[in-house]
Amino acid sequence: MATLNPAQVTQVVGTKYYNLATLVVILYDHSLTFDTEVEKIWSQNRSLPKSLWFVFRYITPIIQITAIMADQLTTWTHGSCVGWLWFRFVADEIVTVATSAILILRIWALFERARWIMFVMLAALLGQIVVTVWAWQAATAAPIVPSRESPHSELTGCFPVPKSSDRSGQVASLFISLLVLDTVLFLLTILRAFRLPANRAPSVPVLSIMLRDGVLYLIMIFVVNLANVLLIQLPGVPLGLKALNTEFTPNVTVIMVSRLVLNLRAAEKSTATNLESTVLSNLGEPVQFKHAKLEIQVTTDQVTYVDDDQSRNTIALEELQGYNLNMLPI
Image 1 (cartoon, rainbow, N blue to C red):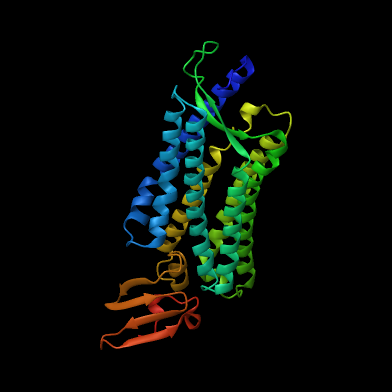
Image 2 (cartoon, rainbow, N blue to C red; image 1 turned 180 degrees about the vertical axis):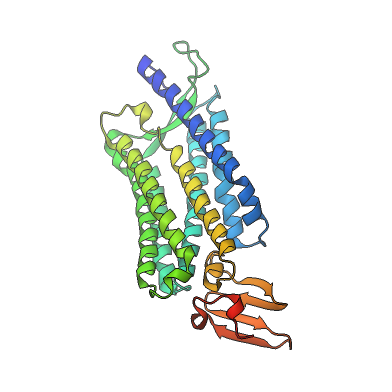
């Protein structure tokens, strides 16, 4: 067990209050957007994007609530602390994969489901997973329980720390890999924006939202992950503060991606008659709706409609770029 000096006592208490503050932030943001979530997400049919939403949206706050409660335990051992941290590692990585999958599906839809784009993004995601697993091999557990020297209940918890100072860079690579993955996804979005013909750009407000929110997301994630790397790498940072910001990282990721998804859903409603915006805001999945008593299905490459004679007609989406449903030749 760890024996704490007065400085370390302050670090432990400060870290626990910081973790509590990050929980308040994500719960507050959830409360602000809950009505929009019910309207835009819950009303949708069951699908992979909807399942991914619930995974990354709710696993993180549930795990953080559990972590804050677990930090109050007075029965931590090194073995139980190691097991708990590995559980946290797996849960956090599941959330990372779910949030990345949401972004990957949207970018894939922007590129009209081109296979090479999916291969590039999956390779980046797989690389992030491999680096993360490798980085965690350099971390160990630091359980803290009340002792005769420090009997106060607030001095409990289970925190990850590097196994040694010379392996701190290996731990820091976890956050570098997250930054690289997000940068790749953002650069692909920019690439698609530049490749989009000028006459199509005004008809795709979804792309503008992805660029705007993507910039904000990348800036926030860069700052948060840079802070993690500096806390872990700088030799002057006390051992008890090296993991200070790790709880905030998944929380800010969930907040930013949630806002991106909800903003895109709002764009779908405001431009509901725009074919391309509608399908892109639905992650490229087919969109089915009725218009003027006609059944219409929109995908990333074509529009299929059934007219009054019950005959099925298909038109390439590229022939209708910038059109709305009222312009269909029916």
